[in-house]
Image (cartoon, rainbow, N blue to C red; front, side, top):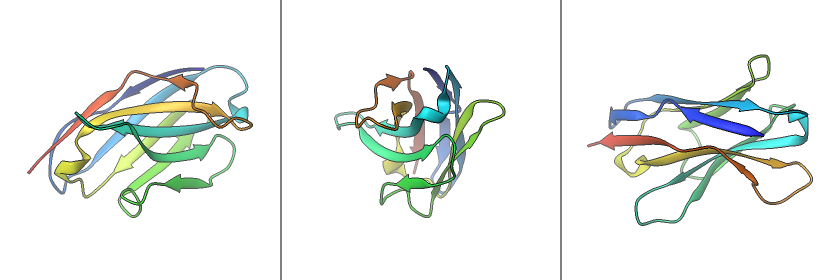
Length: 118
């Protein structure tokens, strides 16, 4: 599975961004797709995940109510809609994939930087 995230940028607090992740590979139905982020000096943390074939999603507590994960199966694209952004959301955001039968995210794309100014 190959992943390429895009859509990051500079936004003011309270603003919105939509991140995209182009996904390629076979049998995507066998994978769970996720978004992670890593701020400078901090460990990478889970943001959200969704299966490729269903609409069930999981969110970190900080993302609930503000972020929405979705996927476009026709165009093999994963999205992360982020609203009410806060300066603490500033981080590099990564899309990732793991097999539904596995526990580790084995496939990662390069990050896209999100910077939220106060």
